[in-house]
Length: 69
Image 1 (cartoon, rainbow, N blue to C red):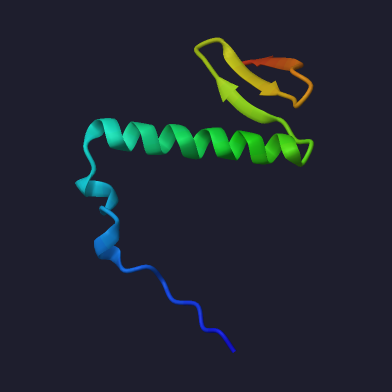
Image 2 (cartoon, helix red, strand yellow):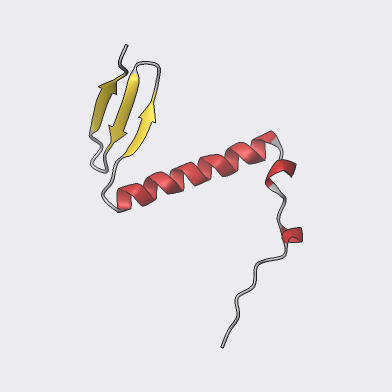
């Protein structure tokens, strides 16, 4: 039987020790992977701007919902 163990923390920087650029790169990669995972499941991801929110579907279709004012 094989027992899995966590990698030692010494090989990776803690999140708060990263530079701003390293944090932004890690968060951008995580966001991209999350979007790809949602699309692989056939689900849209949601983004927003000052006008409202958009559901972006795997086929590229965007459905806009304005904010209630």
